[in-house]
Amino acid sequence: MSIWIRCAGFAALGLASVASANDALLDEALGRPAVPLAEVNGVVRTTSHIVGGEKPESDTDVIDPRKEPKKALPSYAVLKSVIGNDAKRTGGDAGQAVYTFTTRTVPKGYAGTGKAHVTSGADDQESYDGTAVVVADAEGHPYVSRLSLHLQTPLRTFFAHVSVLDFDYAFAPAATTAFVATGMNVHVNLSALFVIHRDIHVESTLVPGITDLPSKDG
Image (cartoon, rainbow, N blue to C red; front, side, top):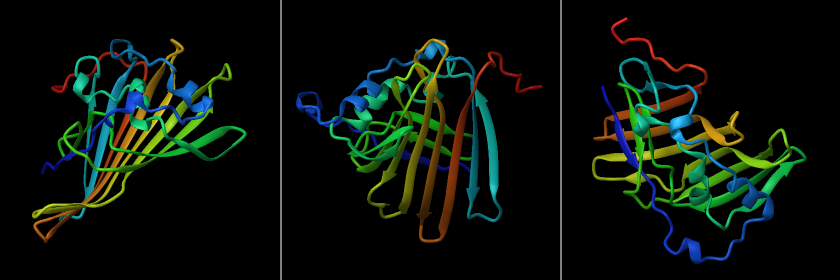
């Protein structure tokens, strides 16, 4: 069984002309460099978990993001367009700062296995409540370590109802002093045709240091 879900991503028009309302800490964090895809060190391991059918289903896939760029984890560089210019600091402590915002932009990408595929792109205009966590690197400079997006309003069509659509991303410094996505989790809860109900979790993790994938033929 395959479940395909297409979801948000729509950069706000006129964003560049709006005066920045972010504070200096977040602006500095969003200005940090991203690791180019060609220099990403490791493979992406993705596991899907589906419940709601006759029995729970799980599946795992491993890809080389340099050879399959459409399946790579999002670049740190997309955070600026996702978070925008109007994030507000709403919490945190001495070790981190928490910002909240609203966005219509989800990082373009793909997460999935043979059991479930979740794609995000520029074909929708749904609104998401966002949270960004900013921490300091070893040199004391800020970067965004976590990004969470939560669908504000359930999606409804004649055939399907998506009640939950959550995205969570993790980022970390790389040896090049740039920043790379280390994880991506997606949670979808959907109903279809009035009788089908599925709860789907897709978890992708960057596994560093692996450059050659084992043959699928063993």
